[in-house]
Image (tube, rainbow, N blue to C red; front, side):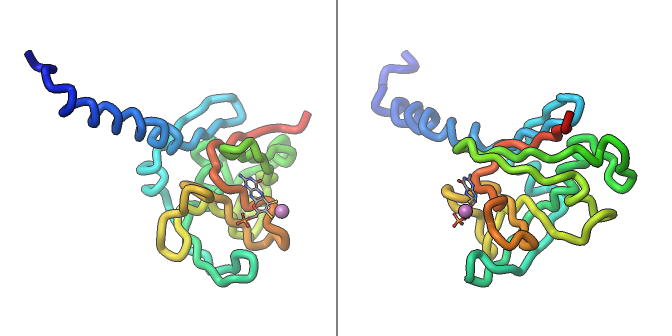
Length: 162
Ligand SMILES: Nc1nc2c(c(=O)[nH]1)N[C@H]1C(S)=C(S)[C@@H](COP(=O)(O)O)O[C@H]1N2
Ligand SMILES: [Mo]
């Protein structure tokens, strides 16, 4: 009999069940203006173009690494660099695991419109973000208050004003 020793395989089953929700949570849903969604894994996100920002986290100097939101827009099908018309009333709605939400106007995120750096950060001072903040957090140093520095980001979606 193959499964005659539960003491051997039960701990393995328990471990897989314990870890599965965490693995599942570690994907980021990106949705375009047409409603098409893609789930990006942590590995896919770490493969995207990253930048490093030296800023302050509250009053403490901190370095963040992350993906410019312009890259996320491209994945959502936005042709950055040629935005006009309807895109001037579109925004990126970013949602977190606790239900917190923020928006950035698309024009805030396109390097042709703005020199602001706004990133989906995955590292703080060289280390992956902890569970309270990560795996992804928005870092937007140009905001004087950090209310849009949304922690535990789960999805990014293009939305339009009607
Ligand atoms: N997911 C999530 N992110 C969030 C919030 C929140 O309630 N949920 N609060 C925001 C507000 S109002 C502030 S001031 C900062 C606080 O950042 P801190 O937790 O690093 O101090 O987080 C922002 N990011
Ligand atoms: Mo806040």
